[in-house]
Image (cartoon, rainbow over all chains, first blue to last red; front, side, top):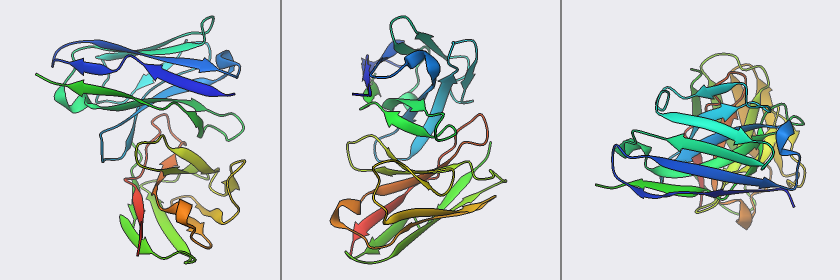
Length: 120
Length: 107
């Protein structure tokens, strides 16, 4: 079964750090660009970051650039998001998702999401 | 960044109704446009890609059209399972921006 499973969410104080992970299974992970998308509960979807198939190219939304780092380990089929200098506005559900070549880049597989809560 | 604007924000409809949701891009995205369905507490699900291509396993009552800056998602006959929030997304640029969402409610 094609699957993405996120982990690492939790409660963290403003200014703190957290590392999210996404375990991929059921497909050739190293062939796909991967993305992180977040959603404040009750609000819309926002693209956060992306990484190409071999990890050599990364991009970030302006709101997280310089604070978040996306990475991947193709040997372990794992995507990561290192989040530093966290702010209250980073509170959200974080989803990892796959960009499908078949669809030209639409997100065809999503994880279940992991909640990050900033709390003083 | 390309801005995506959906209308309406909320839509009240009955089972069997034909429903249309509109998405407008601030600049041309060609046909690099996707539609997703999201239910409460769940991850989004891809319905339509490349503006009009139906994702595998998605019922044929869902259809998409448009190109450039104007797009529509149509549900030909609304079913109980279709009450959800729908998002458009452009993937023409590096930043994959989403619309704000359209909630389809039971009338």
